[in-house]
View 1 (cartoon, rainbow, N blue to C red):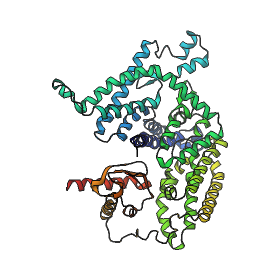
View 2 (view 1 turned 180 degrees about the horizontal axis):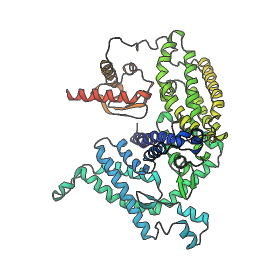
View 3 (view 1 turned 90 degrees about the vertical axis):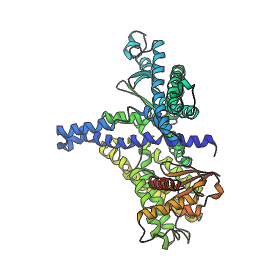
View 4 (view 1 turned 120 degrees about the vertical axis):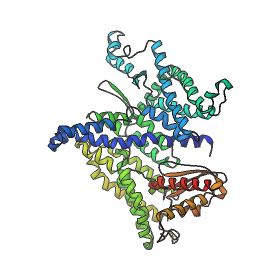
Amino acid sequence: MSNFKKNFQSFGKSLLFPISLLSFMAIFLGLAAALQNPNIIEGVPFLANETLQNVFGLIRRIAGLPFGHLPLLFAMSIPLGMVKRDKEVAVYAGAVGYIAMLLGMSYFLQVQGFTADTTSVDYLMNTEGLSQVEATLQNSLFTQTLGIFVYNTNVIGGIIAGLMGVFLHNKFRETELHQSLTFYSGKRFVPIVSALVMVVVGLLLTFVWPLVNMAIIWTGELISESGYFGTFLYGFTEKIINPTGLHHILNQTFRFTALGGVENIEGETLVGALQIYLYQLDNNLTFSREATQYLAQGKILHMVFGMPAAVLAMYRMALPEKRDRVLKFFLAGLTAVILTGITEPIEFTFIFISPVLWIVNAIFAGLAFLIPAMFGVAIGNIQGGIIDWLVFGVFQGMATRWYVFLIAGPIFFALYYYSYTFIISKFNVMTIGRRANDFDDTEEVEGVTVAEADRQTAEYIVDGLGGLNNIVDVDNCISRLRVEVKDGKLVHEDLLKKTNPNGIVRPDANTVHVVYGGRISKMRNIVDNYMYEAKGSQ
């Protein structure tokens, strides 16, 4: 795999750090918002209790933590995900660099005569003679970030600072200054040079950002003008590129940039589908269907109804004597996809053995976005499981049109089930449980403790990757163990398969992805612990 592709995948993975926090907090924000919704209180009068409402208000305030600081979180998470050594130094440099960039941008804007006062709507209308629309558009270019007046670069500014933090860390981490300045050499020099360089980056952004902003808005308008086809294309593209891991970048682009929409709400300019939705949720406003069409509502049909139907089809097409094991194999994955919207544990069982099934899956994923949009559904957040349907749909009232899924869901289930059954039968697709030797080497061993089983699993993984000395780097994303090895010829997939992965991906000769779905955190931990102990004994 080329360095560019590996870095790009690491970049995509690093975006998940703030997104996971955002998604988790959004659930509490949605619940608290629902319990403070006047319509809900009217139906459940005891919720009007002042103490309860104060508690709900506190929950909403805490749950809003990531929403007002996303750019800074991105500036720190990118170095955390991309840097291999001295991560803490890179994260610190990313944060320092981001603040320095804001200060540099703010200072030069002030030199140019742009301040919070001179860019206010009233000033632009009364002093500059702009119309209300023109003044609002001009005002939307600026914002206060961490109390600093700057161009509204949103999370893109954080991403720029994070990427520069990675670059500057890798370049200057081992810099040796003159003996009189030795104290500032090495790791200490990284945040220093970050502050100096990022001030210049902030200055440059005062010239570049207006052009970037115009280009993003133009692209967003182009997609929005595509109507329902654009919505379908978004869902299809997100799913078809899923194996590359690059779908996270597509998601974040629509969630946090003008590609996902730009709306002026109560004088506040919101950029990106998710930020628009969360602002409306937090302020008890009507949800924008133009924003939610790229959010959780587009995944519910696929995840809550489609994936269980795909599993049922594979179960029914399995050999009769294997069906019990197939059901046990998919049980954890089904739970994960229905509750949280993580599809990899199921999809990776067929994605690499049947391109036809994968293409059909991507088409259905596109339809899952299209159908709710056509019927005016307004359900936000990002996961798309049943929790999102309840918290951000049912609990927010009938205006979200959550009931559409009660009708479309069973139809979607049937569409998946009969399509998959036909394809598996017609093309004799060897989905799990259709081979006579499936599960033969994965029987559970009685009388083995959890610690012993975990150690055995770690040994299978490490030995399957060619041994401790063959492993260059171990990392993981939301569902896969990502490993770089010295010699790909030493990898033994038969040993890796003894750990019951959902799939094994070989992007190139020296890279191995072992897909574990919802088990990935545990698998990463037992491998890390095993390798740490093994290296300590050498």
